[in-house]
Length: 210
Image (tube, helix red, strand yellow):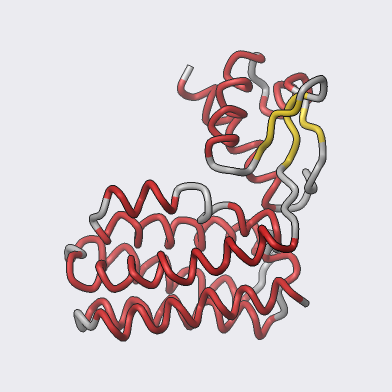
């Protein structure tokens, strides 16, 4: 069952990130089951998890729909990210283990490589590496309450502005920010890590506004 759930979950999540399921698009259990090659039971569980993460809404008489965000909601998400993720980066500079720092550096370097090479399929890989980096950073902060607050807003911006729309300059800047955040954490400099993370989120907001 776990394998079937994972297949259904990733089929929908990756479809949303890649833009195959655009905002306000209805997602039926049948189509996900067909794409993922699973039964409808794990699909229902996957959609519930995606709802908890803010990627899917359930509407009466319509079922599951990809979340569509208003302009005001979009700005609120980025403002919350700028506050919470910069705080989390500062905590990570104090609390991250050597193993966690090593993982963060590996993810940042892989994202930079993908962003520079831009080989076929790079958008999906950059999206996944970006998401993993932010989740790992959240873990390194070592704050369950912060993790709870960030659960949905870390994923929501992926719906609003995918890496499909990033220019080569945007991709390079995003990867460079990740590398500098890791460098700040390696130096155990909370202020530096927090400052770069805030710049990183605000740059993403500017890109989304274009």
